[in-house]
Image (cartoon, rainbow, N blue to C red):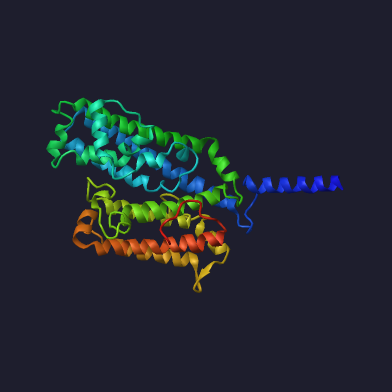
Length: 370
């Protein structure tokens, strides 16, 4: 009898381990391996490669500006910054692997940036970007302040890098900002092109730690917290009883590109949902194809179609926004609230319909009452 109990216990342990380590296929028989392969090879790695290319150009633009701080080189630098920032919008969902390990997204896009902290860093010439206290003093928002927000005129901004008594430290801070960003992007991409890609794809089960479950949670969290709330809801006062905070918008110092970054992020979200290969019209296995495999419907309509139709509504609503979210909020905040509501509807579809269909539990703190 003891032998039979031992065998039953052993079999149970083996089964539990095989399910927990993510080595098994999903319980609904969907081919998660194909899904993860498409994500890794055709979306995640190419998106990081594009970001890496843009950061290389940004690095060069900073070096040129530091050597010769003038209007022409400042304009080139600003253009390179914006192109890199746009490229970043396509990797924001992928808080997994090395990116999670090094807190890449916290280091790269916390806004509003800590301008007082940046000024302190420059004045002292001593800082460690690995410290939590330094996360809000680096990344794209810090670069925004350094090239767009130091003064109200371009001539006065350039003076910080020429005639200012601390000009060398301002130049050094620009150099250190791009060095940290470059190092992080290179580290993440090297990890994906090393052993991590195979590890990611092999974790094809349906446990809470499996790649699909974690990526779905990352995708929905980023869409909800970073796109819907960060880019629109918080500046528009959705979470502050109507008190607006235009200064908390993304790319505040450039001021007229927040809409561009929002549109890029929404496009990135829809492309990822549809499994669209980066910089290609080809689509592979995706959240859309997974929902279609499960024949998931809402109110008699395919859920994947409903979600894509809502993306169309989002794009139409966002098109009505001013290029400057500060101007939009101060002149007619209702337009911002309309964009928030349009974005919010897909939060409902993602969290209450899609994740339930996949049998995936939300793994992050949710205090919005969706």
